Image (cartoon, rainbow, N blue to C red):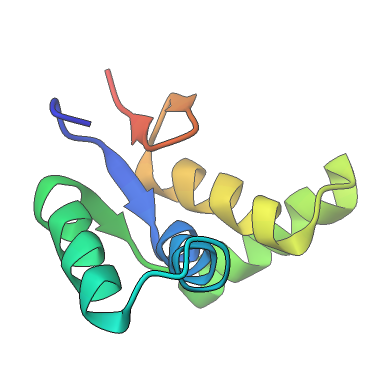
Amino acid sequence: MDRGGTISVQVLNELTNVARRKMRMSWPEIHEFLSMLRDILTVQPITIDTHETGLAIAVRYHLSTYDAMIAASALHAGCDTLGQRACSMT
């Protein structure tokens, strides 16, 4: 991540959920963490186009809606690698 990359709003949402429920982080801690991520990564929004692409990916590849939205965001961002933390463009 130190070289940059792209992260989707869907991933930020899921990180928030995990941080709150499983890691029991406070809201201020979560806000600080998310702010740090948004500062070093490009955030790919979920648009209607992303949503439609995500639905098509979910149907075609039998993915969960959430995972398909992450893949769709990566496609719309022009990423060529989808990793556990962020996608990259070369």
